[in-house]
Amino acid sequence: MSVGEDSSGKTGRRGRSWRDVDLRAVAPFAALVLLLIVGALVNPNFIGITNLTNVATRCAFIAIIAVGATFVISAGDLDLSVGAMVAFVASLMILFMNSGVIADPSTMLAAAVLFSIVAGLLCGLANGLITTMGKIEPFIATLGTMGVYRGLTTWLSQGGAITLRPADIQALYKPVYYGSVLGVPVPIVVILVVTGIAAFILYRTRYGRHVIAVGSNRDVARYSGVAVNRVRTVAFVIQGFCVAIAVLLYVPRLGSTSATTGSLWELQAITAVVVGGTALKGGAGRVWGTICGAFILELVGNIMLLSNFISEYLLSAIQGAIIIIAMLVQRSLARK
Image (cartoon, rainbow, N blue to C red; front, side, top):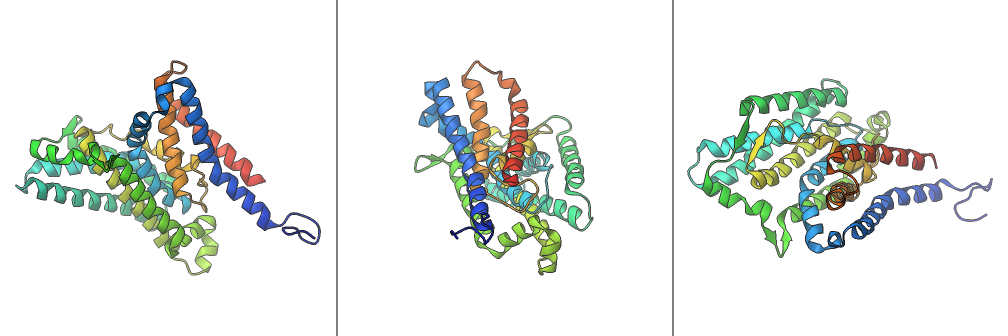
């Protein structure tokens, strides 16, 4: 009897599960390599360091938000409010900096950063408590908070835009997006740091194991002594924190926000997570795959921009098709 087979001659669970996990882990990176090849054939400038660096920088917002979404989805939940949350937190941050309550620009900027992080954490906590304590399906709960955050942003902006006014703060803040560390753009550095920390939490800590357990089977996790509601709520808080980090990069880029800020970012974040190999039903999370998925989405848009084959106005339609295809691939792998 060979290794990996039982007495009946059938392939053992160990061999089969290893093959499935390997396929799901490798698939996003294989798709990324394929896209790079296609892009190079479409336009020779596509594969250049400058273009790829710009692509990675532009995908920073979605990539960081998607890291948080990986925790929420791995725990078996869903957050549809992240785009509206970005608009709301960014509006609060800009209004705080415009208030002039602190005279020193450096101190004001530091306070605004802390204020933004706290606001993101509280928004995530609200989503988590409404879902767990209120016992409302996350789809409905976050659909409701999406309307709340978007409506509050419209009210704060009075239907227009909120623009960062103090020139000294603008000059001090711009390097956070446009600057670099040892030649690497700051947004890329932030992506790597956030993803590295998230990967450690998800793969190397007890909380990370609990997230996967809750997403796999909540009843079994509860009977095993896991505080299911706490794990789910913390996942939403992590999502709020990642939204706040994305806001810290977004504000210095444009210095303005409105009620339309972050529109459809929830679709892009969920697509990045699913394309990256995380199961939408929960129970499996791949943080680095999520970053790969976010990069793939931005590469698709970049290829469409550099070529004349498909209109760039069809990007949302392409992204919608990508998530459907990714779900079909996941289902086919799950049947094997």
